[in-house]
Image 1 (tube, rainbow, N blue to C red):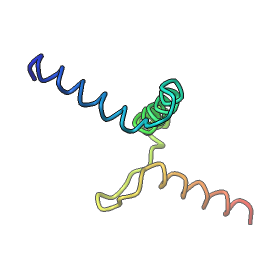
Image 2 (image 1 turned 30 degrees about the vertical axis):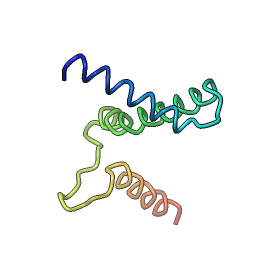
Image 3 (image 1 turned 60 degrees about the vertical axis):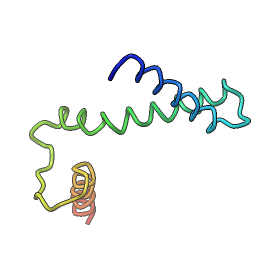
Length: 86
């Protein structure tokens, strides 16, 4: 990407941000967007951090299982807790 392309991309992104912001104050919009960016960061990094912490306890999955490994782990925990309560 050339420097001119980067400048044009920046202008386009700022234009889109201004359109999305509408009548909202720029400071309020910043807070709103930073919250979304933080949630995106968490969603992108949470599973990797959980896998690192759990190590060998990380659930193995079949290739055709489309659930998140954390969902599999949660379901296993619920079954274990239910079994222990009865």
